[in-house]
Image (cartoon, rainbow, N blue to C red; front, side, top):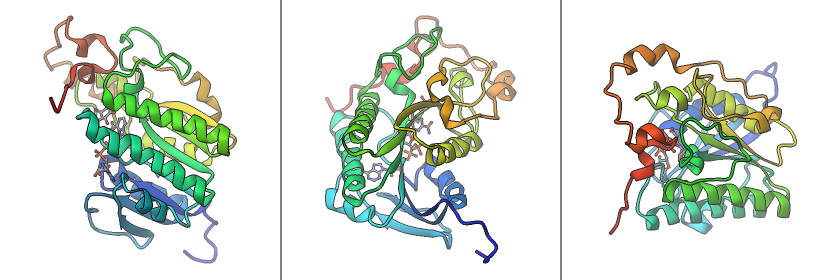
Length: 273
Ligand code: NAI
Ligand code: 15L
């Protein structure tokens, strides 16, 4: 950084899940907002490690480890955890216990802002023809969705009890491109993801705000009417992928993947029987 560079809003940010699909995107994107990005995961980090990065291996289920991990950071972008439906015991450790450890670490270190990777699977049992928003009663569609609902409840509790502000991102489907017909509605481009995380870090007075992470797709199932104060204005759309995806065989009308917002997650598992 030269002496003429504008000051960044944060000195040090913690990014969990940094070795994952979205973590790898955010390792780069967060560089714009912090002098140092502490990139953490239980899995190995893909090289190269940037000059702005500190790599720390940590299991979110390790309370003391997470407390040490969060020392000296100004805000946390919490992307780590199991990202699909699994046996409850696996979800319990990584997502439920792990997210509790993140909030306890934030409390003990006086960290005032968390960006939490929630999921559309908190409301996955709504039909695809119903418009859902942050105040719609939740309908988690699996243990994974339940763990994200619990993470959102942690965020509400830690805001009212300790003043820690959170933006919970109910991410749709964030991949380089939508993979199936359902994702024409749920897709979040990587550029829109980076913009969303930026707004979630920088918007003021967010309390606990819930926002759906979705691009400006033609057929949306989610309204962000209660998150307008974030200033999230997605620029991309799945429309350019429509023609190719419409060549895929349509799921049968009685298949939940064709009817319910959560798609295949609504019938995944049970695992571990
Ligand atoms: P991912 O599975 O690629 O990355 C998650 C990372 O968390 C992995 O690198 C994994 O090693 C790490 N992790 C798992 N258990 C851990 C533990 N016990 N301790 C420390 N690290 C652990 O998932 P992706 O796609 O990058 O998603 C990131 C976050 O966003 C996840 O929390 C996921 O639930 C959420 N999300 C992602 C969506 C998407 O479309 N990519 C949609 C909705 C939510
Ligand atoms: C999620 O929550 C998952 O993490 C991701 O892998 C996708 O499958 C996404 O939801 C989705 O609903 O498409």
